[in-house]
Length: 91
Image (cartoon, rainbow, N blue to C red):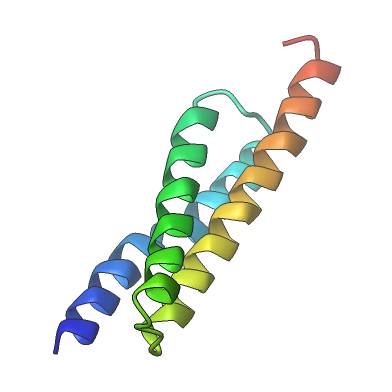
């Protein structure tokens, strides 16, 4: 049951990352996006994944962690793209 609850928590948080990536892609600007926040959340997911390995608790929930981390990396890449677009516009 603990795995299901953990997965529900991760899914609840994880739904926002693809939506945020799509919105950021369409906005074409990095304004309003916090790089520090994205990096801190990324660190948290990496720590969660590491905890699964260190604790020898590798279950299907790890796939949810990996999905969320992948979506966050996409957000980071879009942030870099949008920052470059902002620089080209002189913003």
